[in-house]
Structure formats: structure tokens, C-alpha cells
Amino acid sequence: MATQNKRDKVKQGGAPEVVFDLSLVGTMQDVRDALKACRAQLYPICKTAQKLDDIELVMAETFNNIVEHALAGQTGNSPIHVSCTKDGDLISLVFRDVGTPFANNVAPGRGQVGTAAHAQSLPEGGFGWGLIHHLAQDISYVRVKQHNVLTIVIDVATPPASVPNKPSQ
Amino acid sequence: MRLSATTEELVQVVTVLDDRIDAAVALEFKENVRQITETAPETVILDLSAVVFIDSSGLGAIVATMKYLAPERTLVLAGLTAPVDRVFRLTRMDSVFSLYPTLSHALHDQL
Image (tube, rainbow over all chains, first blue to last red; front, side, top):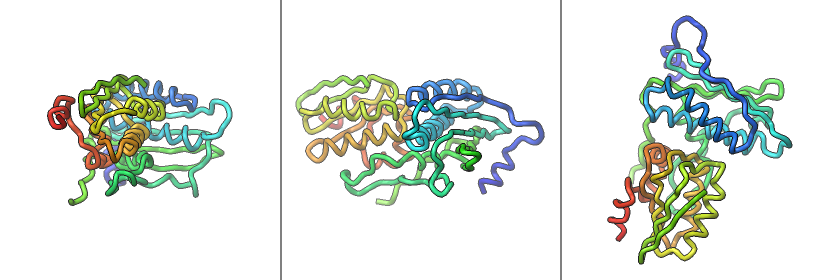
């Protein structure tokens, strides 16, 4: 279904348009600065403020994952490169880093989303990939010559993803 | 991570003065809230009205705060802006916390 949707949404003919292309070093402060810069570039192509917020959240979670996991333990300032292209209503965010690959060369699944019955057993983390999967149309990962290449596709025109239904009481 | 706090009888209001609770400040946020709520009464209202961005690390820090305060004290969240409210709903944390659109709504309900 996602593939069909993607095909319909892609503009016929013409090369994808570059929205932004930037590199940053893998620190949390640089991630903040990069998100601010990307948000400014994405503003003109997002139809709603909520869509812009969603894309910023997806990018933040992806950057955080790269800094906290892929680049963890690396000495020096390892670069992260991110590019964004727009093809019709779809944007493709491509993240590249030289960090540790995902286990089994597969991007993580939805992970932790949901509720726990008791406060003390609530998870304090693991929400990131669930948010990315919920807000993205497509996620793909390849390992190319010691680089992680993660591509996330988001539709900027469709109404923002709805929130999950609450479990029945 | 700047916070301010006021206490009135059974309720402490902790106001987040920064506009982001993200991975860059999640640990600091957790630590600062613990310090400021050390002698808090039974209800702590976290006023998030200045916060326009929260990521999963920030969300985790708020969950950790709620667990730290429990069971003697309850954490209530107030003044959620649209992007913050959305993260709570997308992760279904809206069913775990009491969320109020404004601080006055929360105070009205708690006092």
C-alpha cells in the first residue's frame, strides 16, 4: 500500500528537487542547530504546522539514534550528512554516517509504543523508532562501504498521521 | 535547563522556562526537576507552556520524573503546546498522565 501510495504521489518526469543538503558533527548541540536550519528549509513546502513538527521530530529521533548508538564510542567529531529531496509530494531524507551498522543490517522496528498498567513499569525510553515508523511513509537502510545510509520518505501533502487508538478500557 | 517553582499548600507548580526538552538536556532536566521537587507536596504540576519541542528522550525524562515522585506524589502536566501534546498522544502517554491544556485548568482541578 505504501508503495502504491508512493508511486501515485511522485511527480511525473523531472528530477527530484534538492531541499537541503548539510553536514554536522555528531553532538547534541549540533543536532539542535541542524534541526533549526532544516526546519527553515522545510517551512515553505509543508502544508501545515503539524507536518513541519512531525518532520522535525522524525529528524530529531534519527539524529539522536545516530549520535547515541551508531557513533557512540567513536573518537573525534564523526560527521553526519543529511540530504533532503522533494519529488512531487514526497520528500526523501537520506542520513549518512560512518558509525556502527544496525544489528543484522536491518533498521529497528517500531519498538516501544503503548502503555503499561503500572507507573513503575513504564519504559523511560525506546519510543524513538515507534515515532519514526508512525510518521514516515517508508524507511529503508543499506550499508555502503562502511557508511550507514538510512532513507526516510515522508508525504508532505497528506494530513498528518493520526494518533493511535487508545486501548479499550 | 531552567526551571522555576512555586508551592502552595498541597500543590507545587514547576515551570519549564526553556523551549525544548530534547536529548541535549534530558539528563539535566531530570536532575533539576528531582532537586526542585525534593520537598514537594502531594501534587506536582509541570507547566510546559513554554515548551515547543519534545523528543523521545525528553518524554523519557518526564516518565522518569513521574516514577521518581510516585507513589507519594503525583505528577500532572499542564500547558501542553500542540507539538508536545502530539508526542504524548502518538506514544499513548496521554493515557498515563493527567494532561491539562492550561495551568489554570490544572490548578482548578487539583485545588
